[in-house]
Amino acid sequence: MKTVKAFAAEKADQPLGPFDLQRRTPGPSDVEIEILYCGVCHSDIHTARNEWGGTIYPVVPGHEIVGKVTAIGSDVKNHKVGDTVGVGCMVDSCGTCGNCEEDLEQFCEKGMSGTYSSYLQDKKTVTYGGYSTSIVVTEKFVLKVSDKLPLEGVAPLLCAGITTYSPLRHWKVKKGDKVAVVGLGGLGHMAVKLASAMGAEVTMLSRSPEKAKDADKLGAHHFELTTDLENMKRLKGTYDLIIDTVSASHDYSAYLNLLRTDGVMVLLGVPPTPEQIHATSLIFGRKSLAGSLIGGIKETQEMLDFCAEHGIVSDVEIIPMDKINEAYESTIAGDVHYRFVIDMASLKD
Ligand code: NAP
Ligand code: ZN
Image 1 (cartoon, rainbow, N blue to C red):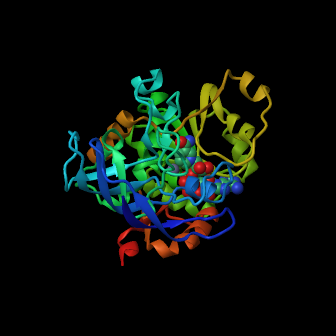
Image 2 (cartoon, rainbow, N blue to C red):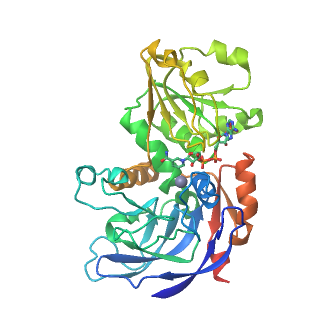
């Protein structure tokens, strides 16, 4: 075991603060990683504050991890010391169930091991995430990262990137498809970049008029204000696919109305409270309401390679570890452009 520095929330209503963490000595299949950058996902906030219930305290959040390999176990084949690597939202799964065999580890029938506030496959050992100076992860869940891209911008690809890439691929977005993205935050800005790189005609649907210029820079072809009801009426029946990234309670029916016949709306945001929809929102126009959870390891590597090929990274604001509580408040207020990323060197001093 090795003691490493971290930041943790001890309780739902307490700010995050310094915390010492024990990381295991790398076993034969393990990779030890010095963490250079870790993105700040809204899921970190939901979990630290127990907004979904079930948080295991103390919690060290962080599942958008980029770093360098510092040690490997004797059986590790795909990574070597000095490699640049990434770790996302999962650190293990059973590896043998039907979903794992189909590269859908996020839906492991025995339960995947989340990177934090979760358990390893022994169902006893608690996991601690990337707000720390190092992590030890079994080799299969360690991704290869290109040195061509700025690493601080790569970190958010490990969650925001794959979470938006996976539904765009699953629903086979192609050139000319009309894709709308709801909510311009961490996930939303990646959805815009990825959908436009896939050739879609992308519309940003946002409640924040000041984000219109940024949406344009990110690659959106249109920007529509969702608070303008006349606008929402005019857009009825427009989109093939809607990617909903909103983190707070909102009316799904208002967006379903914007789908064309056979259109699909995919929920990515996880508001803490349930929403109601009327059956007619789906029946008229044979529409589908779907959800999507991150992506499997194979698809995450495919996404990282796609981003390296297309020069896509996240737009980030770099912060030192001790500014994390302020970053949470800014994220909740929608004041982040478009992902806070912690420079982990600030925790080593
Ligand atoms: P974020 O950066 O905070 O972005 C959320 C965006 O939603 C905001 O920028 C804002 O965009 C919009 N929004 C926020 N509050 C709103 C409100 N009250 N009414 C209307 N719009 C509101 O969050 P994120 O990191 O992208 O995460 C978004 C959600 O996805 C979170 O719930 C997170 O837990 C979830 N998530 C899911 C997965 C998955 O696998 N499905 C993976 C990661 C995260 P505008 O100002 O443009 O309207
Ligand atoms: Zn996340």
